[in-house]
Image (cartoon, rainbow, N blue to C red; front, side, top):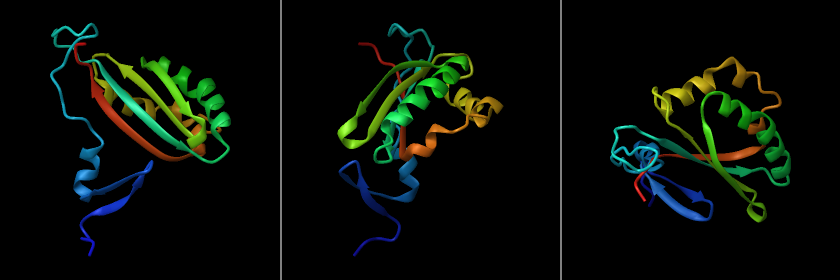
Length: 143
């Protein structure tokens, strides 16, 4: 019998079971000591975010075109760096990594980005092509 305090489901083919209060925590990697851009312990905190999207069937190309034309330049104007982007056409999945190493920190800058008039004015919004979003905030470690 399922416990009503747990959510169950399938995410990208992987079954999961988590308590609701643990769902957010489960989407974050364990914090690691901050390292600089070159992996030196200089106290800076280069944060990156892994963004994984499930795209509506048949809409991957339209999403990528809109993302490239609107979201990428806007993210860059807010000081974010696009580290890379990848897709799995057969599964309608899109993954990208963005980073930010400014003084206010990733989460504060990300909140400013989403609250901005520029982001709210994006039309049509490429997010309309998405069926699921999963994000993970990560910190750099020395290689």
